[in-house]
Length: 122
Image 1: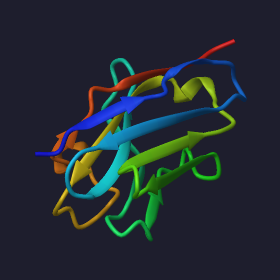
Image 2: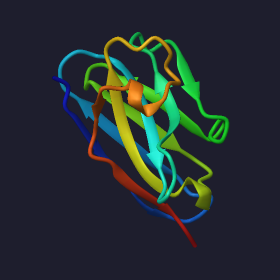
Image 3: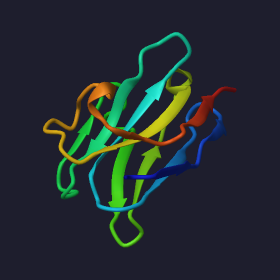
Image 4: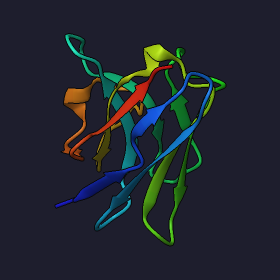
C-alpha cells in the first residue's frame, strides 16, 4: 500500500505562490497532482515519472507550476507561481505503480491523498 500525506494548501492572492507537498510511503511510483473545483471533473495538473526524469503539465499551468521530487524524503512538490483565481480547487496527490502515460485520467491512478484546498482570491 502507498500512503500519501499532503500539505501546503491555503489562501493566496492572485499572482502569489504556494508550494504543495506530498509525502509518500513505500516505493517511489509515478506521481501526479490533480485538482477539482466544485461542480467540475477532477483534472490532471502535473505529473512526474517514476525515474523523476520526465514531467507532464496541463496546458493551463505550463510555465507557472513545477513538479519535483526529493528522493531522500520520498516527497513530491508542486511549486505554484503566478496563481490565478481559476486555480482555486482542491488539489490531490496521486500515485500509481504501473501507469504508462503520466497525463492520464484520475481513474487510472490507484492511490490518492486526502486533498488540500487552494484558494486564490483578492
